[in-house]
Image 1 (cartoon, rainbow, N blue to C red):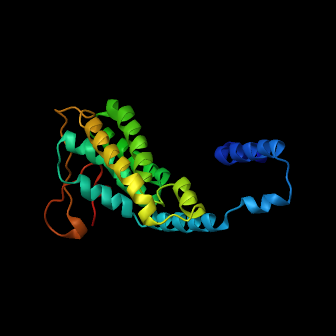
Image 2: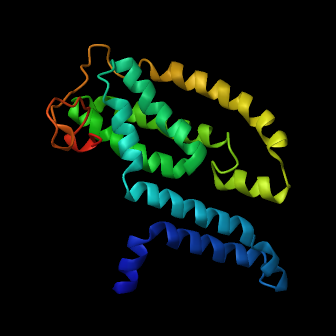
Amino acid sequence: MRLLAFFKREAVLTVAALCALATMVLVPPDAAYLGYIDLRVLCLLLCLMAVVAGFQSCGAFQWLAGHLLSRGTGPRALAVILVLLPFFCSMAVTNDVALITFAPFALLLLDQMDCRAAAVPLLVLQTIAANLGSMATPVGNPQNLYLYGAYGLSAGDFFPVVLPLAGISLACLTAAALPVLPRDLQSLRCTRSPCGSPGSWPCTAHCSCCAC
């Protein structure tokens, strides 16, 4: 029962292990297996994940999102911000981390504005944005990191190829995000005295998103 519970809890790990075992049938294990492991790339990914986890634990991403969304912007600008946040953040913290960070924030915001109907198109655009933005830097996703290291690329080799594509993606995502939220949608505000000081503090979503 404990083993079954572990498999259910770690579904991704279980599926990955089964796929690895399946590939071993096609390519039987031998001494060459040791050469398949790129320790340099794995160490870089580990360091990157540790840094990202540190930023998440201290609330840096939540502060950034709350700061950007606390301006009382209109629905069109708000939709563009929500889509482009994972686009730009994925360039530094990988696509999956950017999506995991900002997708729940977007859902919370939509709930507060009673606009959950826009969740599906908004999340689809955020997913696309996270993947397209991640292609712009070597650390945006593991594939880029591997190719950058395996082929010994330099910044002069990498960026001239990917930046034009990233620019086109940025323009298309901005255009696609504009009609996602209704025009008559009202941005939420809440009143809070930051760090005990007098005055009001504008905020979208819960007061917990306010940056003290």
